[in-house]
Amino acid sequence: MQPRRPEWVFFNESGVPISTFIPSAVGVVRVVGSTDEREAVRVRLRFKNGSDTETTVPLSDLNRVDWFKIDHRCLTNSEYRRARRYIADTIRAGVSNVPVERRYVLDRTGIYHIGDSIIFVAGNRVITQSSAPRTDPDFELGQLPLRLDIDENIDISTAIDRMMRLISLSPEIGPVLAAHTISGIIRAAFKKAGMTPCAVLVIVGKSGMLKSNYVPHLVQLYNRADGIGPTTRFNSTKRFIEDALYEYSECTAVLDDLHTAESRGIKRQNEDTAEEIIRRIADDTGRGRTDGKSLVQRSFRGNAVFIGEYSIGKASTIPRALIANITKPPNGAILDEYQRSQPLLVSTFYHHFIQWYVDHFDEIRDAIDARLTQLRRATASSTTHGRLRDTQFYLETSYMVLLEFCKDSGFCSEEDARDTYCSFSTQLHKLVQAQEARFRESVEVKAIDYLALIRDLYKKGYFRVAKDVQDFKPEKHDGLIYYGCLCLRGKCLEQKLKSIQSNLSLDACVSVLLSRDALKLVESKNTVQINGTGGKRFYAIKLSKLR
Image 1 (spheres, rainbow, N blue to C red):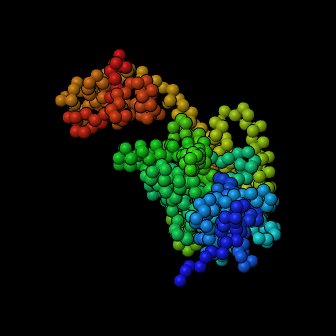
Image 2 (cartoon, helix red, strand yellow):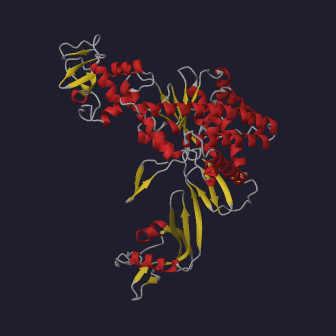
Image 3 (cartoon, rainbow, N blue to C red):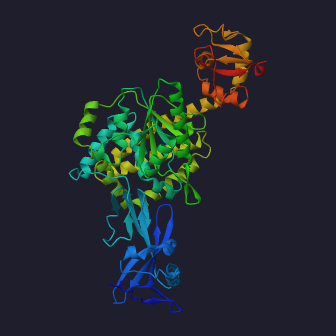
């Protein structure tokens, strides 16, 4: 039995059959994502019996479309190698005469402005303005890895009341954590007003302060039904941390476990990671990635909180962060009760807040703009670091917005809100001034000529130095002379520096020695390992630099 011959209905100018369908462009769709805009064409495929079907194809893919996969009635002439190109050219020729529509793909969390509408994508939820008409949306929700899990049984009054109790469990860090989290959610309003919140909040406290329980519980917005905990930890790779942070658009991620590791190398590696992430967030410059043949520079669109057991920060990163110390743990029994009995309380609170934020977006933006103008005028001659002034501004403003929400919801009076705000402002001012003091101290330390200081100590015999490897005894000597270098153990050098001035830093010392070409490097490492010393490592300072 002979196979049935295709019923060709579309031919080229020479009468060569092209396909069993007649293609025509009926509309252009501009697909707008958060980082790019692509064009697609809506195509009608008409068949011999008068029936038709429609499909949407990216304009860039027209030459490569497998029409048979779209509809099994679509056959092309395999004996004419230009058949697919001819179909694509026919569709392109009609593009200029068809209407254009915009279609938004909501591929990140946060605020979108679509026409006259303002919406907030909260993971699996699209929160629109309460007054918005219920019409067919001109957007589609992308596949996001985040969900806003809420408890429908918790009303707005209960949510606010219990959230405020959670904040008050730790007066030292609760209010500033709440302000920082709110600033992440309302980030778009800040940007529209001309400022982007971009400082990292660092929560510092010794082990046992319940930091790793309390901080995520207050901050985590998404996926709470899966458990409450940090987004990632400092022992992850920098690339992994940046990828995780990139997903947290207009919300706040938590990085945990900056602790005093047994290994000095691990501790330094974690600190290096923290320093770099602080700089990237504060400067809004993520790691570049390739998109096809182009290099795309990522930018962070959310906030971060670090949890650690000690303060970090060099002169360049201290103004980019704010440290809040916790010295008293929150009530563990109450915190545990919230975590077990109402794990979705906080995300339900933020759901109510986001709805209010979307409804009042323009007012909030205008209020931030007015306050920002006042700030620039009032601090024109301020001696506080500009980044720290901005940090104080966005945290104070965010807390004000939080209290405005509580007031509008009937939770507190104008007078109560004002008193609470004043108390927070005083607390925040102390944190900012403490960070300013750390910055000034770091600048003074950086200005010290460490090489001259070590030269002076060496000449005056302050270092206990063995004449060679055979003479070296770890319990007796700070180091030894080896191949034209004064080789000092790191901990011994640090102890000597601290004994002279408590704010002297080993890291700053090493940086100065490197800049002056005073350190001997082996395989690009700052320290050398000397055989015969039990595998110990030393900073090898060239004797020629000490004369």
